[in-house]
Length: 451
Image (cartoon, rainbow, N blue to C red; front, side, top):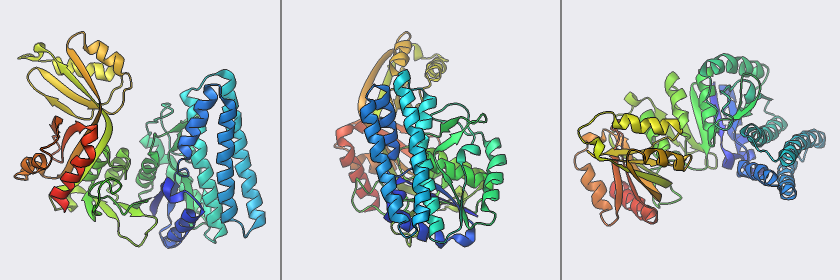
């Protein structure tokens, strides 16, 4: 069997879902498990609804809820217009979902409290709605489809907005739920992103978590392939929305894909790769608007023989923390002390560069940043620089690629570089530039290596 994940832009309207149905129809003999995201922009809208209600603007929250309901109703009506009885049943279920959403939003408003637990409940409606509508559309088209609630088998801890998957529970529960649903059916559909605790509480896997769901299901089910359907032709040499003349990469290694996703490439969620590696399941990234294209196939590292630069990724809105202390000179334990503070406040570091008396690090958000810097300032001097951009050149055997540094930094010599870091993995060279220089930098690098 295979897992097919369709992202928000691949289910954004009735035309996109009609394309999804045709793609699935061609794969029926492979007994696919279909994982879907919420309709494009719906998760953002649900978050806005929750925040408006919490801030006391219930009228605006309910108006936005009404607009969302209208969008889902219109799409369902377009998909099921030829079957009025089926349409009536579907609209009744959609109305029920929105009734439950309004209840939760009302409670948030009355209590003036928006806990992570409540936010997770509210966010879950996006995937519950999209999966139900597509389930109905598939059956209406003649594809026998069952629906399974991911909250019953994608089990996490109680970190409600970024649940940590319980691999053992998922390995046990996912095959039972999905194999049972597949009996007598062509396919089964379930939700990406949303999950649950062992006690039945709603959690979510964090933004972009639908890819992660697909990989976890693939791992648990022993899938032969995981397909990630998006709106671009696989993984590109850099973001085609920012640079012209990019091209799709036909094959790449798990390690290269992991580095790219971690360092900003938006085609895959960073956590997607690990479950696939565990069972050595190929991951294929495909374009739902041009399904005939081959996309990118991600394989075990030893199956990829090519070396050198494969792609350029980037992250925006990066924060650089510079730490200086003469106490670092000819002493030990300073970095241990430093990272204990980062661990205490739950701050994750992307890049690090050190010298005898200084450390520079990057983080991608300001979570607990004030508390962090205050504590570090007790034993070192700290400066913080905002609005930076991080660029990563990714490929295989980069340390063995002669002249690489000259080519990278020669191509961008007109731009100021704040920080440089090369990973121990030998797969990336990363550096930080000013926000306003980002587009020029990635364009220059792309011309140097790919044009």
